Length: 127
Image (cartoon, rainbow, N blue to C red):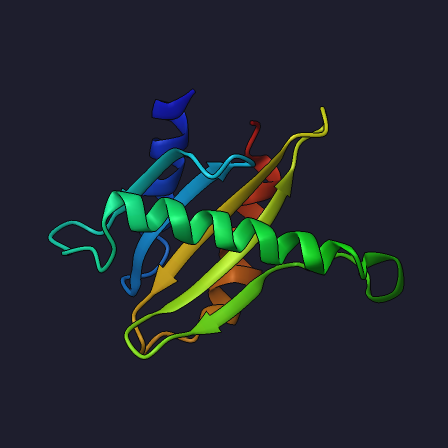
């Protein structure tokens, strides 16, 4: 399955030249698959990426606590000084929870890419 997830992440990179990274992690914070833009030097090490995933999972859990009143969070967006990052919760039909993380160059407006291109592809992803 990891290879197909990495293939999916590589497909996401092709949606916009400003996408730096796409990765899917399980609810334990382990990357199930990922892809970096060719030639890119990652800002985080593998260990730092896993810590970042765990932090994103915690934040996603706090957002879920308000779903009954606000509706399901479609995605979360954070702008850092060096990168923009979007996280999307993925709930499987069997009840599993994954998190999809995408990072963008600063000159990219993530919302149209996420709403128009990435979320529709995630609907087709089977984990």
